[in-house]
Image (cartoon, rainbow, N blue to C red; front, side, top):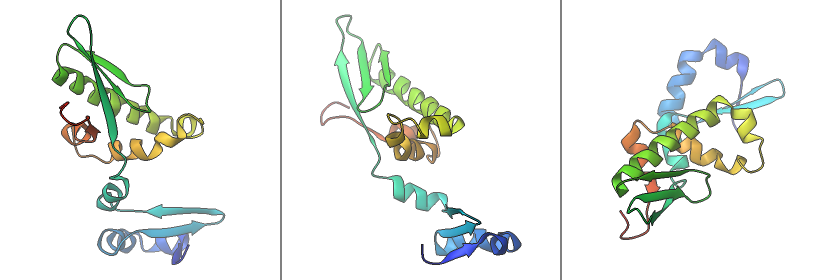
Length: 142
């Protein structure tokens, strides 16, 4: 990594370090054997923007709607499409929060590691509406 900063220097100049991240761009830091990166929320939103969710709707015999997110074990059912979308959005936020809270378990599980960029995209959103906007439906379905 080019331009890696020493953690001691970062700690000594914490305020400037944060200002530089927001105004000049991401920074990379090394402390002993560990390396890490610092990004502004705006930079993360751009980096994770391609990681959106594809929703599939199924109308059930009782006229309710079941929605699933492709590649995820998330399924919700509502009496209307709108209700199903609200429920799956809430479930997605809950899943992302659980992923973050139990990060080592989820990230190190082979069937969950690939969820990481999607989860990050959920976590960096400002509100529920923004998370809902990450869920894309096939043309004509929403």
